[in-house]
Length: 139
Ligand SMILES: [Zn+2]
Image 1 (cartoon, helix red, strand yellow):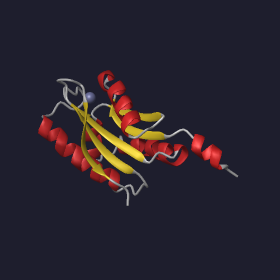
Image 2: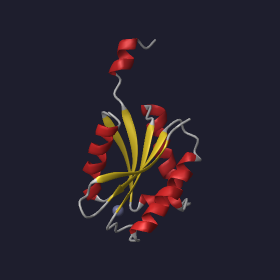
Image 3: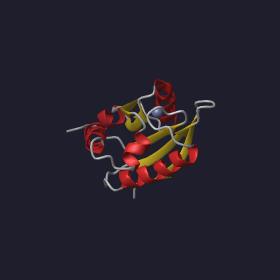
């Protein structure tokens, strides 16, 4: 049996579906650790993940979903973040298009019926600061 002490000391994981771009790794980790009081961020990286998830890319989505589920089911993550950023080599579209992809991508994630909050994050290539774009809280 798990004691209360074990539960309280259990490390808190959250999940990020992030771009592979090296410039957005630490900003996303630091933002999620601060905002969600997380100890660890399980990082799932692809080039231009907002586009892949929004378009439900048949080659990439199953692998992304499998990794998200490991983070949620084995690490107990209660937050899944989807990240889009400016100057994205894997998804070189306008800022407005990124926003649309974030919205559609978050809807796709909601459809997976996981017991998690879904957070959309935008990172401008002007200052590489993380902005919360939208949240869908679990109900
Ligand atoms: Zn990118």
